Image 1 (spheres, rainbow, N blue to C red):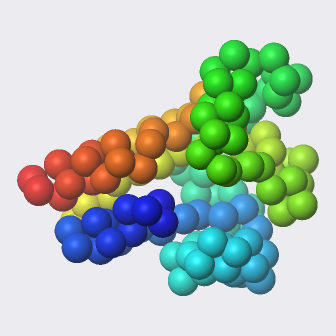
Image 2: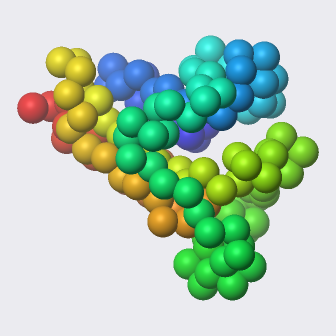
Length: 134
């Protein structure tokens, strides 16, 4: 996100991150990445449930080929899992992303199938541009 932040802003696309935890945890976690003003706390995971984002079978954490590939890509890009900020219950929550247009309608939704399953930010920027253009 950081490398494309100006592109999202220039196009008038507001990016928000839903974080499992209360406001204190959300601010502390997101401030590590300079994104604290963009984080929305969701301690009960109500947003995740409403969007239909499921839970991951943690028994597959070290054997899922797609997750192993994503980990390798992230390490090569200099990113890593922050286990200190993650509880076991949080680890099972699958990620997701959505584009909600200015009318409050979900124009696009992606439900992850493993903990690292999110489209690249460049792809999400293009999807958001297309969804907000109509």
